[in-house]
Length: 329
View (cartoon, rainbow, N blue to C red):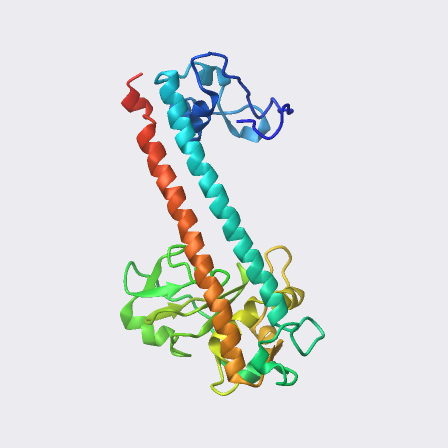
């Protein structure tokens, strides 16, 4: 429904436009009715291959105008629409709060890690102000690593969960993004180069390039296009390393070192030699990691809140609007 402007142009070869003129019909009710795909169930049987637009699927608008509607009276229409509008406004407010938290975290990371060409961060915790300059070293010098390349492991419907590049997001592992497994009897053979442990840091080398997460469960296998890093015990804290990889400075350098056009990718040999900066004091590393971890906890809670509100709204819409079959029209 057009809401942000009083007037707009509509490319009529792609879209159709109509106005609710019946005084006993509430326009916002219709907007939510269509958002619930009421019309989609009706129009699907009229889909045809268009003669224009290189054979794209299309629907003649005459079938939209002939669609039967099951409508409650005006007061009930308004009640339903206003109820859903209040939820939308709440979702919008909570989504803005989530974006503000994410923006705050990004800005904080820019302050807590040295900028390009600098050896000290702009902000430092008071107890470490006299700690001297941060050290600089190639990733390979302060970590052990495994690049899981080679033959793709045989997949199965159950067994050990296989973390692929699709599962690794910016800061966390999404176990629902891809659900693949390898047989338990093949686990040791596939992971012969290094068994993943809790806290190991993962980074994707392509499709996508540069996503970072930390292993948060045992008994998982790692697929191709994933490199596993583990900080040397007295040099780099693993969680601190994760945030170094997530920092804007490192991500920018990663892009400069990647190749392959739009998709982008980076060779493990190049990634291992990229430099990172870190304080000598492991306690300072832990302090930075704990600070950013707390913010991530708040962001995760806020993200879940938005997801729950959207799920609630979806269920509410399914309950408030009848399907064409239920309406018996």
